[in-house]
Length: 163
Image (cartoon, rainbow, N blue to C red; front, side, top):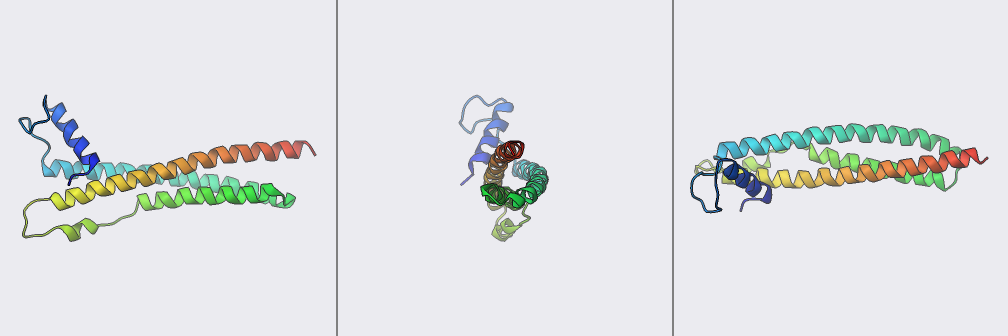
């Protein structure tokens, strides 16, 4: 059963080739080799985006750690809020690590006696969907962490100015 991302790719391929109906009339869809190449390209893009987001999360953790050091001197609720912010940022980074995870589990689903790549294509499509969702969740957590960081920084600066 083809995954949604693969179905959309086949649809785009056929429409770009001039198809006007959903029926399997000419022009045909992409070959197995084209599907596999496209899926690997998508996984490569996801890996590079996860790497960039992981680097950003690392910078955010460093900034929060500096702020934590200052807030620990005051030992108020800001101290615990910055710890919570660090945990949110680290959770986002952890999701990014699982996007860039190297796994060749689909090779175990390939039977050399069967001459088609359906198992590999379906597994690659599943990986694309799973890793896209992980990256999306990591990105959302990073955005939340940025807003929390800005809010916490404003509160910290305002409390420091009021002393």
